[in-house]
Image 1: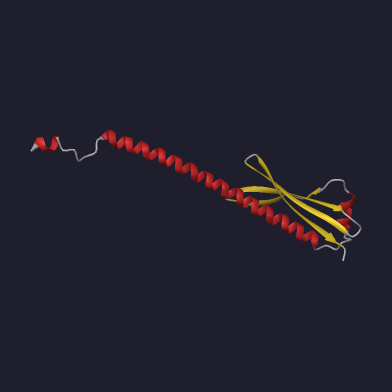
Image 2: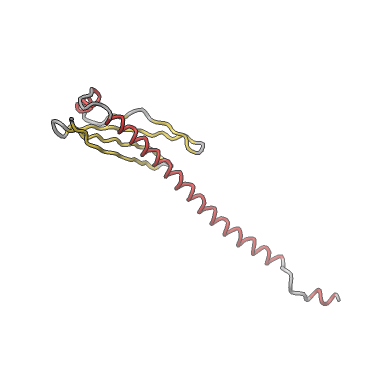
Length: 138
């Protein structure tokens, strides 16, 4: 009976078990890297979506003003755009500042071009989103 147990090849040796654990570890590390990349891309998309929302909100505020509004008229005399206060937002436990920049250019006696650009930085990379419209005198 002892001889049958010694030659039984149905079990797994310690070396085979350790090799399978190493292979499983390598596969797990590759999957974790993929997961981290997916999370980072998701955060970038959320930041971009928030920048789009802020730009549209600022643009709607400017479009709702009358054509001869003093704010819009003052913008025409400035040579560069005016940076507004930073807009802080919280994403997944960290705060992100979005910096809107508005620029209004007179393109005729009865038309003005309004551009709103929102800038932000994520992981050392500068990003921006711009919205442009033309406002006409009615």
